[in-house]
Picture: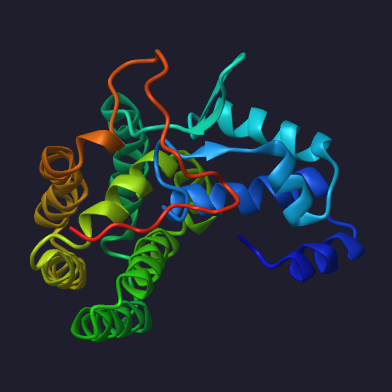
Length: 252
């Protein structure tokens, strides 16, 4: 979670406490610092962050609305397990917006745009070489945000980013798969080359295949770690970790 002193500094600049707590918790969940199924303690979080229980409780309600936590009366609050239907819904939103943006990008992309995208590809290759998964994920996000900016629809990226929290958890779990980052860089490179060539149909096909890779990845991850997934809304046996202790990030 964001350091307590950082949260206090942001509060001193007038930022809303509930918003800050929500952002900090959301980041921990999406990054898998808090694994699916982890129990969350309002009291521990409030003490850790130096805030009252009210903004913590309000933040958890917002996260429940996003499908990132499950709140069960008399049982407690838990980081939600990944539901494939939620991944599919997030993928639908992402694909619709990114493919629409790409269509507008073809034919208007400048040499500087292509150079910026190729620089991101080089940085991704370096992250792959170092097996820097967290760095690679950030660069992957930057690449897709830049693609939307090239189209003139950069302001739509926050909409995509907000909608794909469930998708991002699955994407992070997929990175340890064999040669996954190398494969993603190759797909990114193909998209850039087709964009540079002005080939709309093939660029759209390449982006679509790239974005849908997550579905086959989810099947592989679920086979290895079924405890992280759920197809039901009913509560399941919670994990023993609490939000204060955090969950350990998995290697596959």
